[in-house]
Length: 469
Ligand SMILES: Cc1cc2nc3c(=O)[nH]c(=O)nc-3n(C[C@H](O)[C@H](O)[C@H](O)COP(=O)(O)OP(=O)(O)OC[C@H]3O[C@@H](n4cnc5c(N)ncnc54)[C@H](O)[C@@H]3O)c2cc1C
Image 1: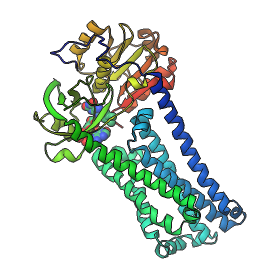
Image 2: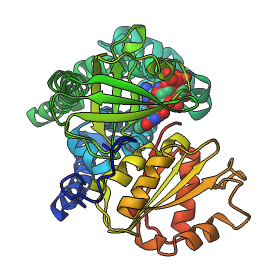
Image 3: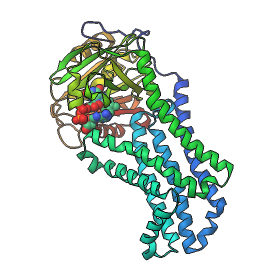
Image 4: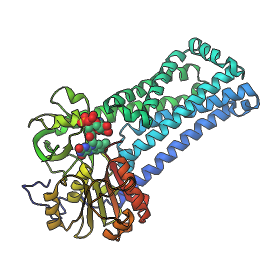
């Protein structure tokens, strides 16, 4: 770790993470492709079983056709429901290959798709059972719910999923406190569990052959085991193994502190990654908060830098040395793992510069190969530390002061009137040939993405982590 009292690593290869070996990049690409293939194979397999079970021939009559289409949408919804849980189960292979930021976006897309198919399933099956009479459908829905086995549980499960989806729509989500939204979101697990019995007791497609039974039970078992192993057991084991404790809390700027953490042994974490932290110092420990490393990890220490925005981050200021810490992670691909080029551009806003500060120390680069664009409105974070990296590692730094100058612009009003694209290509003429690492608020990061894409940076060289919705 580089701190004020210590000198910069000056490119010491033993202390800096090398560019990812080709094997690691190939493995990640293979996992991404494999995950897509497995997903589509699963969807095609249940569609095939549906067709083989008379699904297509049933389409010949109106009422049977409705029920049959409803069965298909229900089967696809079930696969996607479990896939969306798997996507957020922190499966290490997926985490490394895709990154948490992108996984969360895919989870959202898969979740809304699954929910839409589930609504179609309920509507179409009920309509079909009502002999295709639209006016008889509400009564049929009631009968199905109260008479068929597992249907009351499924109705309760649907209620949970409706709540999760409604509170995840952007407009509703913005109005909720993060903790409230997250608590409601956990009801999704209950919703998935409550839907299972009706699938087993009334869903012919689930039990029609041993292969189908193995497939569905296997999918449920793998999903449940992934959540238990990677979201519950592994964090507990890791926290016990590495014995993370607060070493000291150091003020960085107004409302910003750095926390030096000690570990019993070196943690397998890279500069640019983040972990979820629970500080065991009082009532707030039940809520985990994600923070990025703000310095390259050392053999017995990590550092995070926290801006006070609410209760959880405010409590960090009062942490005492020795406080025990439960950690989940590390997560994220904003690290050397994603790198494909020698030259890199690091672009950060405000406290979003923290993982870039760690990368500027941890990445392997020669003088001139790494440039940092740091936008800030108050005093810039880590100014002295960046100056040390400039002097010792040849990091180039562009200080971009000011508040955002206009909607859609990611630059501050202290940098003149040139367009974002003209300014970026003037400052970093070879931007199209660099890996670009970006961290800041979601909307700001999207604006940076637009400019770098216009400057010729392809999507697979744009690596982003955003701190908020
Ligand atoms: C991957 C990632 C890395 C981050 N790294 C840093 C960092 O290095 N330094 C830093 O100062 N901040 C970082 N943040 C933001 C930080 O997690 C939140 O500011 C903090 O959790 C706020 O909690 P609070 O109780 O103080 O505020 P609240 O008032 O509870 O929340 C304020 C906002 O913070 C976000 N937030 C709150 N809790 C969580 C949570 N558990 N998970 C995700 N987002 C949450 C929400 O957008 C919320 O609206 C990071 C966020 C993410 C997602």
